[in-house]
Length: 331
Image (cartoon, rainbow, N blue to C red; front, top):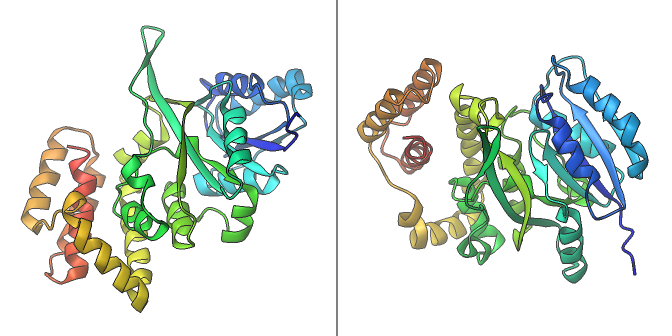
């Protein structure tokens, strides 16, 4: 019997004219038929919106419904995602950036898993990063959540996420629309850290992460990729530090939370945390600066943060360790 559950593919765009048509084509070519297509553009200054309008005119009959949302000025990724999700009428949401590609069985595979595991509200899968070299796609090894992470309960997953231990598989997320209604939408305070706060919100509310062993998305590396830009300009670093401090305060303010955190941290801290000194962090920061991977503004901002965390209390030690994890991945 054909499954007629409506799924909303939400394409999130900003100055994506170079890639958006390939993303749109991947939505059109889904084997699953009951799809609505929402495109939310965040004030593009290139030809993205015009390309999307023309494409929708030619292909809107493929979908149950289509909608193109535009704004006059850039508002940030979380706000752009929220506009798409709020406009969606499907039971399930598949967000995808307008430079990535859905494999043709992406929606079918997700729906099949959901039907067999009806308690699921948030589902991940595997993605394959790629870049274009000499006009050809060069593929890298697939990325997926580790089994070690998946075996944890929601509280333990929360701790791993807050310390940056979770693999970056956000493009594969398949999310129940009612989960947004229940927990609230993406936090618009943090312009480039939409996934991090939402994952913390989910696990803090006992939504445990699950994953299927299927490849569903191709993730594109390129110089204007949002992930590259937000690391270079330091926005990601600033936002993640603010989020970390905010959620750490919430966690430590609750007696049960402190107890669970201490129990898990004591058993697992040395696998992903280094209680580094201020001088170790500053040395690592200097090494990263020499690689030219970060801007001077980013360097100065991180240095300011590190000097702020110079005390030897548990909070400062945790924050230094968190900084160290971010820096070690950029060296």
